[in-house]
Length: 281
Image (cartoon, rainbow, N blue to C red):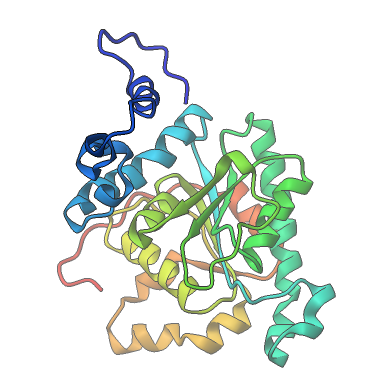
């Protein structure tokens, strides 16, 4: 990162390099001698969790500010959904059928990236979880449109490299799910949710809760695939039971095509944040 600010103090990176050149002695080999910010074992101590949380929040923030990225179009969706050409590899008939949404996500990202390019890649920038499936489709559509896109990856036991379409300079990796989800939503101009599993549901309901409780501004919140989403979640039953209000059902829309979603975003008129109602949720 470039920083033109002048400081009277010696640069930390200079001392990091200098410390590597000290004579090899029992004292210099001791872990206690390492500079604290270069000592990985020290940085991974439980007591340093607050520092790690802050660093994980700050690193992407600084990069995105330097790139002048002000708003994003967030895509949530399943990692297991194959592209149509590979649908024969799907483990279930339903996943094979859902492969159609790979192309919908790809086309939607292409349309949004055309808008992003018109702003100098500052607004409407596609942001995904950086993985395969729907995430790959989102980054792929942006790449094919000639724009940039974010990949917000998370370290998992079955970790894979980010998909090949994420803009390398905007490929981030997280340890903390909470900080990752914060970065998904901090700049969200719209949220598109494609069929998915636990991870997609987790991200979706956190975002809906923030909007429902007035902790986040209302944005276009679009569920791609009405039949899928109405089959896995009985939204009306929640309202009928009184666990959510009928008004809450207006927080999101169902769409089935990229063009339909793009038109909603194009014609969106921002609504005021929701009033906070005690006991909501």
